[in-house]
Length: 220
Image 1 (tube, rainbow, N blue to C red):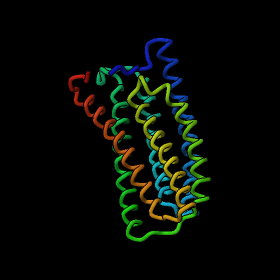
Image 2 (cartoon, helix red, strand yellow):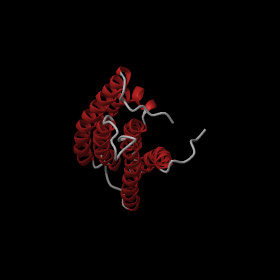
Image 3 (spheres, rainbow, N blue to C red):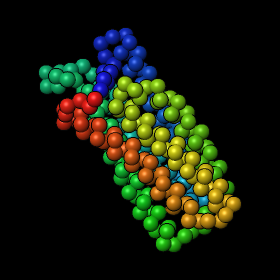
């Protein structure tokens, strides 16, 4: 896998600035909508919406870590770090993937409790806030999408945001179903479905990161 180091040429410097700009946009949008979803989740009593807000909190930390890691990769090599700080980028990707798995474990636990005792939710608030979240995630995906190809670090950040976008779609679908049928069990079901999608991408990211950190034979 080829990962640009952003150093040593005008093109590399421009790529570094583009990556940093994409991360800053994604971080700002995600932090803003996280607060909105947390408030909306409490008001609507929706587990799916609260789970998405918790996922976004993880994303805020992950994007911040990715931004710090990106700054480190721009530093030159030294006598003690002959490869520079490139591995910081891979380490950030590993932490991002691992955090996704942990947040999904929490969501599944909360969903289990909801399955045992269903709770009333407000589908209108669910859908309204989820639409805002989807729009915000769309902006972040647009910012990170073109930059993820050359960096495992940005790929990790992109997967976080993409997971949020899928979460928002799930919440919207759940709100529509609950609104028309009154089936409250849909809320925890949507949460579990979201986790399944997120974990699949996270597991792949962790595998790729560990593969590079262990200096394994490149995959074909």
